[in-house]
Image 1 (tube, rainbow, N blue to C red):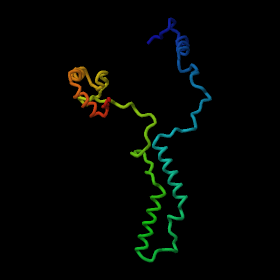
Image 2: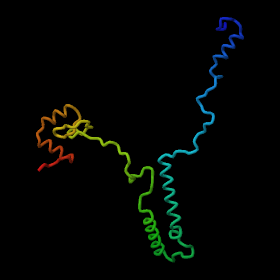
Image 3: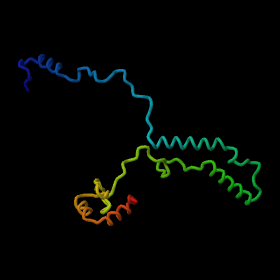
Image 4: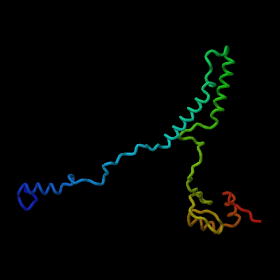
Length: 170
């Protein structure tokens, strides 16, 4: 195969290849002194696990002597042992009155940024992006809007009352 240059000399061909080589060019887009950050971001599960671990360590260190019975004061019979066990369970429940911190705990605090509440059609129950300004009923599409406009005021008030948006004017 013949070289791609006008001259058939191998040296000129190699010189051209060296000038067009993109791998030999310096790449200034990367800072030579850049280092990855040392701080690692935690996900929600890790944060909750740390909080639970911290809470459990506070509970065990605060009442380590009261929840562990002494070895020399063993109860002489089963009734006393059951009573002591009941007392330990009661003390344990008084220590941690709230629910345990877990990733899927249903009793978690409400979100600080709640999503927009979705409105549903009063007639069909589908998602309602529109509201009739005259009757204040929410509707899904044009067919439902035409039905709302043909309804009487009693039916309209019934739908509003079912939704909890019924107002009585005096």
